Image (cartoon, rainbow, N blue to C red; front, top):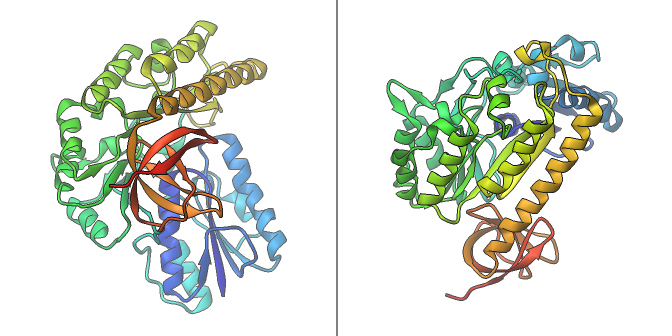
Length: 406
């Protein structure tokens, strides 16, 4: 029998879906993460925006087109927020964001398979996502996720090291809902980084908060065998007044100081970020500060999106920005983000990097450098191997490169 595990939303959702996939393979299913004909569908949903919730509900109709009689199991943040919306669509089973193991148990019960619980995530040939914590205690005024995921919970260092030891992927990505808050019994994220020194793989970090960027933390990263110098440092707004309204615990100036500290230790680092267009309290002046901070911080990539009021959050009660204004601001942010990405990649032309080959499309082998530039090489290279390349020119969403013979 064939099962499809399809994911909307964040990297944490993807990791958890990969754990479900591994469990279903143990039960004897042929498993895919691509939508297509199947006997069983597991839909891992997202609720970070209203649009994400809408897409999550629409998935039911999409999969029924492939197989009207298929069994459909739903989990994730959207079903945690409103499980009834999915139950009413006649699916087989609904759980939430915190109990995805119940999906594995339900499928095992319905198909006579082994209820093995969630296993280590099914991995690609190049990158293993390691979930080090779950939950968030920040309660940003616009965000529904802490209410759905719950409080922060961190895994033991020895469990993380044990999972890493079981993967032969050349790159490890540490992720979670808020990895900057990783910790237990006085253990911190910096302690975890120090424990990873013996790991002979490239190590990349998920999204970070300002508070974690310290001299000690950055020095610990420099001492890793192969650290990927890409820092996804959450911003959300370039205006201090908007940051306060968002319940973000830093100012514009403090954020820029953290960027300077990163560049001090990693001069060629790629700092990437998220910026929200049209938050409820955002004035024209506030927005101009978000535009200008893109250049001041020297961002390599910006994920810009329009503010989406989420019922149940503090910001939901604030007066929203008119849709036309929000749309115009988003368009301007996206344009500035594209210019920033081009500027960063252009500044890397002529330099040499290591990149890990991920796939060959018939024309180029593609993969990523440590500083997260997508590379296109006109050679059919072995997937999963690292190669030294020199950047030649900006190309599509990344850069053309040629192999450097050592």
